[in-house]
Length: 66
Image (tube, rainbow, N blue to C red; front, side, top):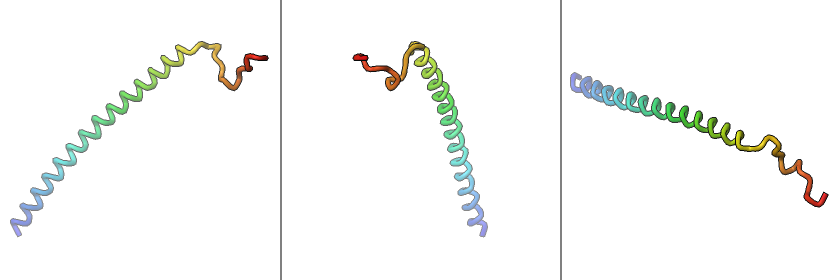
């Protein structure tokens, strides 16, 4: 009975270590996702700033022969 309890405690300890490692990984990944989202927003804003205000959608433009 004592050996079984020790085995369970060892497995629990490994499970706790694994859970903590996974938690750290998820935390780092969320930080990276947040940084990438901010980067996408900044790049999108820069791209919009580069497009002239007079630019129209291609469907709105008249063909050159009009």
